Image 1: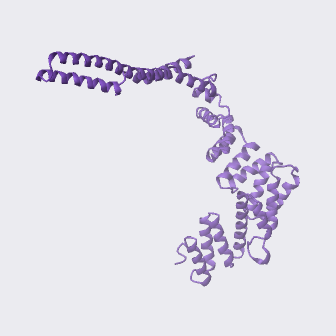
Image 2: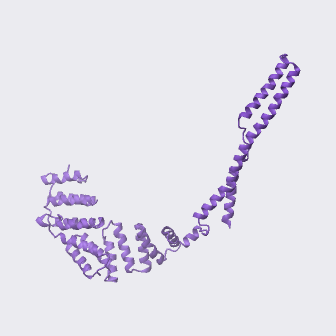
Image 3: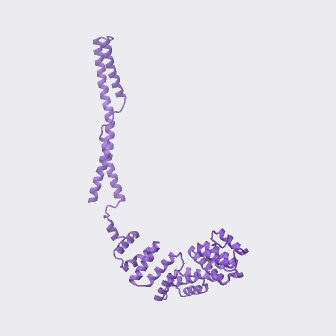
Length: 379
């Protein structure tokens, strides 16, 4: 009821503002009758002057004055009608529009498109009943946890919501709090590990690996933990172990497992590259590598490249006298946006190939092209 009272008050206020100009007396409009009035007035003045100067006799002046006066009265009436009738008609139509048509049109539009039956929802009520509004749900949970920081169930609820909304730092903190207060379980440990991996741009860090191993100890048939641990082996350059881990997952997986195609792509990628590529070229991708990479998503392809780079780094540690290998790994680190690793690889290569040697000058030239610091090892 309060709503309709407010609507009525606002409608009346708007109508009053619009009606004020219409209620004012309209300015006289210049027409034919108005022109005649001016002419007859001028004629009366002219008769007075002519009578005063003796150009016309008094009796003739009186007769002429009576005739002009009669015409002046008729013209004045015509002028009044000319001004009043159209203005009055226009004003009445405008007033009717403001008073009747405009409010009625607004009411019809509101009934057709509005929700007069919808109850009011102040902020407190919206927070109490968020429905499908994720932002309100998050705000409600954050408000609750600010008052009750030791509510583990609240942190447990909020952590995956943070993760799905891309708030990785908040998600990591929420998972950590939930584990601290409620203890570790598979979902919390896996979620925490995935958050740490996302923060590291897809790299399975040591902390994430520890959480995954803890999760796998709680549930041995946990495919999510197995996948990330196998991925960690691949990123470390331990390709044979990674392939075996992925193959074990595929062997034990149900035929309709949603993650099976991803595992099979990793197996294909790892099967395509041996410890030394054909022809003895360190780290060159094989035809199988290329075919597998074309079918991968951008994230999987990046992980595959990172695995190959790590494998090449391990080989160069055993065989540092390979100039082509050093140049390839420096370029690869730059492509992966890992410039500190590229600079470290350059410094290691310059120990084998001094900057003043022919091979060393090639390394320094490459560093210059890639905008990598030589650390004083070259000009």
